[in-house]
Image (tube, rainbow, N blue to C red; front, side):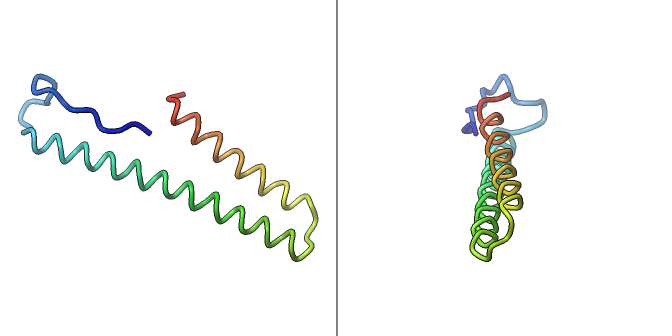
Amino acid sequence: MSAAQPVKLAEQPEGLSALDVSASLEADNLAETLGTLALARACAQLRLASANYQRIGHGPGVTRRLQRAIALIEASFDAAQRGE
């Protein structure tokens, strides 16, 4: 995910101060960071569920589906990182 880029004075929307623009960028960065953390947490929970299903002897189909879900989440995240 991209870091905040400095906003030039000429690019500021009319009526907004530099502080307003800075606060908006900080809010965007925080939202992006929280989204990243949520994806990482979801993947960790799916990995734990997969390990638990394997440990208690559930069929391999369940763990394959969980692994596929993890791979899809990670691929989507990687594509978003690249801007696709």
